[in-house]
Figure 1 (cartoon, rainbow, N blue to C red):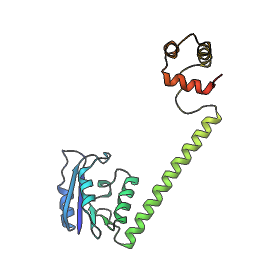
Figure 2: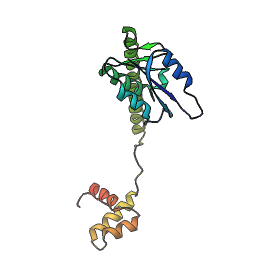
Figure 3: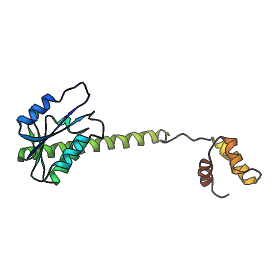
Figure 4: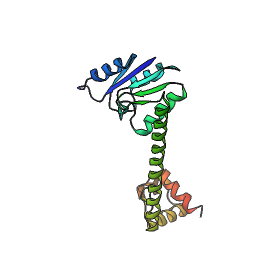
Length: 186
């Protein structure tokens, strides 16, 4: 059985075009959402995914109606495939129930993985380059080296409570203990 899913991004948009196309394609039941594709919570899509059974086919008007991103689209279609559910996108002529459709989907998956790897490689190269120039990532240190030395001396003298030391340097107790861990017990 063909199950349709339609989505519009805003309430002033209309589902008629998608609904008509899905009915013409033979969809017996159609689930809808009035939500941005970027939103993770789309109750209509969740109901459609819960509703489809092995041997069914989820049909959308266009690919961008289903996935928030290429990665999300691939995850949804792979999840359908594992359950024995086909996927059809009417505008792109994409149909995972055919050999050609499966091939195209696998190419999409490979391209998405390639893109993720490129992003990871560029990120790592950028971090390495920054480190080579002496820049480290992460949050800037709360205290200067001189302040850390003063704080260490105050703690070692034993004349001040940890709360007093923290108030003096404008830090929290967890921050104090993080610095203390770095300078050790001495």
